Image 1 (cartoon, rainbow, N blue to C red):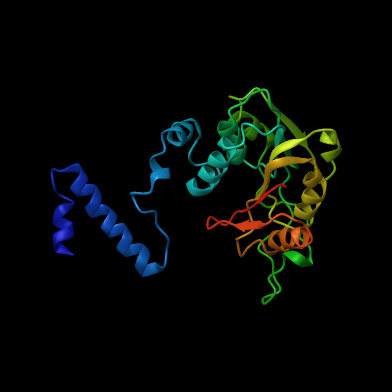
Image 2: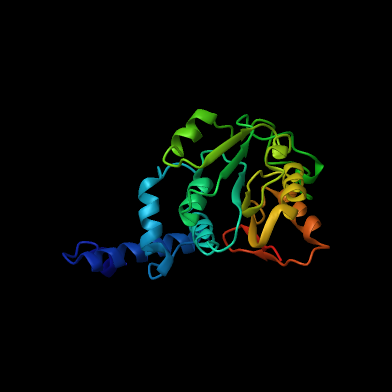
Length: 246
């Protein structure tokens, strides 16, 4: 302990950084928190770091989930279709999807009520406690805030309204990337029913909420919908889940 404390005072920046990392590691271990190992390549990915600098850090999802969206989108350049984000909030996911695709000829469609969540249903209640983490109107963000956050893009098309009311706007479109982040069962299953047949082969559907205990309805919706489909549902350690359309 004393040796590590002394290393924090070292004139060598690398030694100081390593000493602080050991302190953080000890705290995380004590309280059962996860931490990133400093030699993980994605943390210092040049393209991702450049994108991060353009995004207001206080807004939106964690960096591992951002990188997963960004890096997945980068691999879809040869597949036709627009992109869609269902449940936009501050626009963090839309930003990193757009940055990864890096193709302004594709329209990025944003679906959100901008009035917060819809009413939770029985599927959104914890099976043991019978309570839900959510209520109608939670995590509300004004549309003007999101529009400002994404003002650097000229290919964003906003569809304000409740899921699935505005989906007919894009009924004739094909999609390469569909991101679903609506936390609850009903809007998740409604999104899957609409977008599944409109995703190009090789395109992806990602559910942000699949692996979070606060969102049992989203997990149930994904598992129900893909139970009789040919695609495999991949559970990502970030809490996201991904399907690659066949």
